[in-house]
Amino acid sequence: MIKKLIRYLNQPKFLRVFLNWYGPYLGAGVKIKQLADDFSSATVEMPLRWYNKNYVGTHFGGSLYSMVDPFHMLLIMNQLGKDYVVWDKSANIEFISPGRGTVSAHFSVTKEQIEEIRLQTASGQKFLPEFEINILDRDGKVVAKAVKTLYIRQKC
Image 1: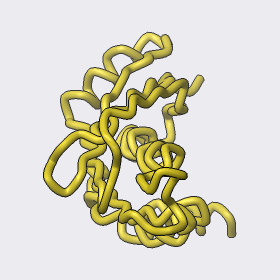
Image 2: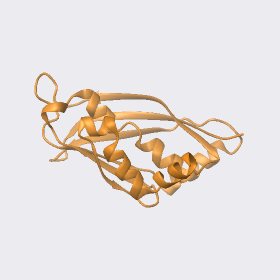
Image 3: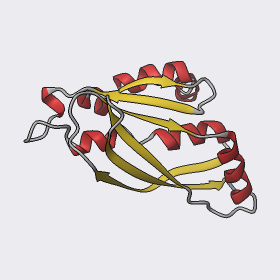
Image 4: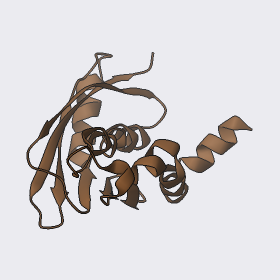
């Protein structure tokens, strides 16, 4: 039963709906606006609300980070399939300018990147690719930059 539910939720259409109702995202106001049918890209937005503001009236840094947290991992693990282990290894975020209004982030994993991952892990070695994500305001100005490092290897 649980495996069927997980398989069902891993379809892009349903995963997007599930994530939009997922407690941490619901609480922060994060909305998944787009999730590609082939898991090659995703776009998220977060409007500024009273419940995700910090003391000075701009986006709370934890909410900015949460909006970028799982997406490269989700995109890659769904493209690679069940024969791979994909985990978040580390992350950092640099706050560039105050986040006011609605902010967004776009994630993309190309076929070339997937092929590089397959090549780097073919001998059973771990691979630690890094992905940079810009969080932008409505005018396209960078509010924050996050760097995610993933741990990827083939299952034994």
